[in-house]
Image 1 (tube, chains in turn purple, green):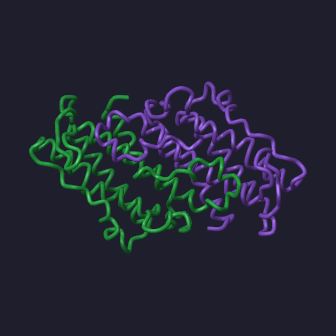
Image 2 (tube, helix red, strand yellow; image 1 turned 45 degrees about the horizontal axis):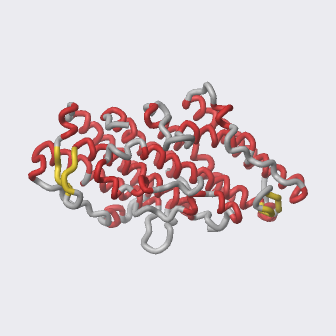
Length: 179
Length: 179
């Protein structure tokens, strides 16, 4: 489907409550387990989503509306959330994500964007010229990419417990996709 | 981690509300779109989860407790939910899934299973001998495999709208894993 602002907002608005319903008060064996080494747990993924709300999506939308292609976006540091999440509980992170997302969606609505705005250009430091609609669509798909990762990380905790059923459980055969 | 009944129940109990938070009243472009051909939409996935609640997980647990290996499980028909979902709205399916899952988790608790029960054997028509704990772990991971699929199917609807960002969005490069 083509980009649609209302449909994008509908999805963006639901992600925090979906994660909250899945993760709040879930035993830590599910939420702190990762896929080994420096891979991310559910806790880390929520921290990453928070960092995006703070520094990425709306900040870049504002750069496009103010500077067009003349000012490239600031690069997004995918690792900084480790510091920001330190000492917090998952419950705190879930609340923080819900609050920031709600503020950002309100700010997006307040921009009162018109169809002609969606083609405005920005400059991504690595990808080159992108449009405002591509940025907003990516915001929503970024939620899905991390829900995809989250379901894989949680399934991984039971990769041995399922025994021979492993063959049938596609999520246990996902090697990630650079997400 | 090793199989743990309470941790399994904790995850099983949360899936219906997570799907409800994500999907209820979401525009149909997200919930009825599939990945082309006869692939499944979000609507189809919820129908499949309902069918599992009706005919698979607890039915198989009861067969293990009553017959051990002497009676193989009935094969699970992955396609029958198409008929069962016909004419229903996604809202109805979400309510039905929540209600059936809640009944099944109550029934599982009422079995008052003890650690020695988890090693009891059943016979899967294709996989051979399996244990009760493997069945229950698979029930939980099966939720995750379909959350994995759901996030991929929804992301697919915006595969073109994201433009050059597609490179960075792992979920758009998932080819499924036989799930």
